[in-house]
Length: 406
Image 1 (spheres, helix red, strand yellow):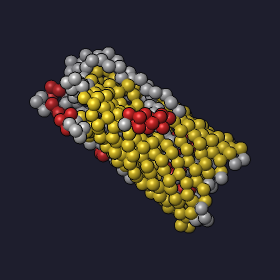
Image 2 (cartoon, one colour):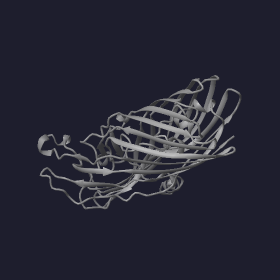
Image 3 (cartoon, rainbow, N blue to C red):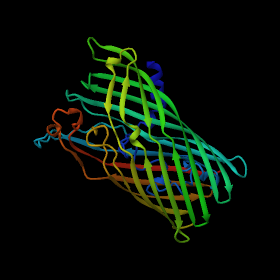
């Protein structure tokens, strides 16, 4: 089992860059594809690169076949300051987060006049961080992520309408280190889980485009092993379910002029699937670790624009507001989340059939202060906020991609 986990970690090493909250704390507010990021993520109606299988599986049938090879770098500084009921501030706690380029690869090819096939690989959810141990009861380190391997087919119903579907395989990696929460432990695991996606792309006139996408929930069954500091120490096999959420996106894009296109999008993410984080030990159920989450669904609103400055040079910009899904009661240092405001800029240069795209995105917001309500809830300790204090952070995303029309 240890060797298998080591192999899984090696295969997924490129996918362990830090992630800061989208609603739910496990998805970046704006990610996957330099072209999408540069337009604030308002990409469902456009979806004109190799990552279209993620954004809208119907779009590849209406676009030119293409291949995209991209990488992104995410820098996500964050901090937590505990504040007790009397208002006394503790020492600032900041985690170590790895900064690793994350690949994003997608391709589409024509199988016939009406059918386009392809696929891709990307990391839509999750991340890794480690806090210095303080000796207090806490979750000290976590890794909770999924790498998606996607295959898709798109069908052109008419010259202006297409539908598409994807089969998604989630490759999940999970680990957690705790101090007296409820016991001191070091646990890790790896697993697989299926999902699907559907998309519709409709372009009723050349200057107007609409898109809709649904991605199913994805349950990744993780298995592995861990050490628990019970008695003289126990080595136990573990199991865990990663319940990644379903999502729905609606978008529209209009060419306001011959050179300017404006796009808008609304996203819904079903984070209520995160009811709890449960680590089970089949050989010793009394040692199971269960953490309440009770997250809420979320909405985000996005606007983007592209200016075709010359036939070969495009300039892009975007902005968005991304909602909060983590309630005060269950937010912890690992799950930084709040209502976030983001902005992005980007551009691209075309060289014949080749193009290079880049983007920069910044998301930030005011610190979120969670009150210490332990006195208010009294004997109902299960209603007390787990991590009262000030939660703060921001995300800097750098994207670069090379694409080619096939």
